[in-house]
Image (tube, rainbow, N blue to C red; front, top):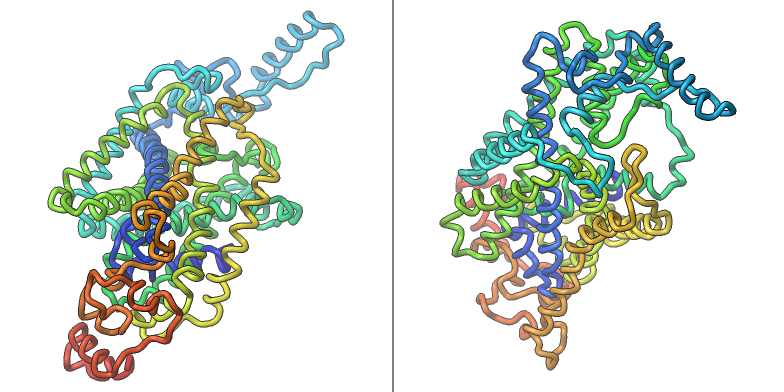
Length: 572
């Protein structure tokens, strides 16, 4: 999935954004008919931003509660704990046996033929999460009231995001130096500590043992694709936004390879960290590791905190773990928020001088939209948003990106644009992936995901039909913008009279932002405002790039200095 979908899309979007220096909406002047793809990207980013920052808020709360001598989720002596709360080390205690016997007596008295089974006990971390942090209700139908703790932490999370972005991309770039390096330090510390725990090897063996039968399930591939999208970030628009700030001649090909490989390696490395602790917990609970693993937020806020609570000096490891979650979350979040802000100011240039205010208003609005998730029933909204906002819609956006760039704009044109920046064209591997393999894989995943569709489930709670309908509405509210803008673009530009090729062909001002870079290629030498269609459709065709040695040399000398003639001659 990384080699045939993630990496090709990653390199495609870096090249796309860097070449044009435009945001995710305005960049679609490459083919105005598909401008709805840009709006779809922004809506997806907004929906993900809303619930993703709630995770950062939860991480803040767990971090604050970690500054104590005894972690509150390490024992059952808190106000929120129930009689069914049992610490891992006491699973075979007389108290557990007494509770079991008592419940069996009640069951047999009600029905003498009933089978007496062991009741389901809960761990301290599970009750801390469900009964204290969330105080969750029985279902989506009961939304409950706001939890003031998580509400304040959500406000704090959005305040941090605003401060990171207040001065624009330069301030966020400085933050990255910390958010990108600190997690590696913490992961290494936690791995060393985890490998010294009893049973850690069991968890690592479970992690490395494949289950081949899962490869026959479409859901497995859909989840893998979604993970790649969340991990590398294609189709959200954030890559396009960040790449638009690069120098025109930045080696985005090298960047794509390094980042994608390091990203995948980091995910594998983090797996060892997580499953070494899961193996330790499985040994403590006398269970198979598969019975310990949880899904969704449960892994970060139930399983791992429970494992940390069993360690010596547990508050220290808890502080390190949740500090790492915060840096990872903030690092991802401000890229997606910057994507939304850049889209707004690019679409409405009058707001560029007031970008700080745009950032503030954007953060405040999305903070308010996230408040329902901070209610007692908010976890059910969270699960719906996680399952529906960025799954099928991301696959759709990525598929259409490949179609537009390789079949509407033309692969040869796109490859020539990359050659203008890097000095060489992408090889045959990229052409096969962008034109055939990647869109085919994405389309197959979308089709089989529909065929094997199953309703959302949170633990043992199955969402009602009207809850599923809310999820589908959240998914299609972004996708519907694509055909909607196709219709509006056609009506505005053509008026049902001229050929639709005018809205399919790129606009005359498409291309590099600076005139010195536009001078590299005759396709972009036409005066701004000239209709591409009036030029004999030359820019639409997959014509060979026409440039002169003198033009290339002038631009390279300007970018890299007249003394660096060797570098310029290499490109020529």
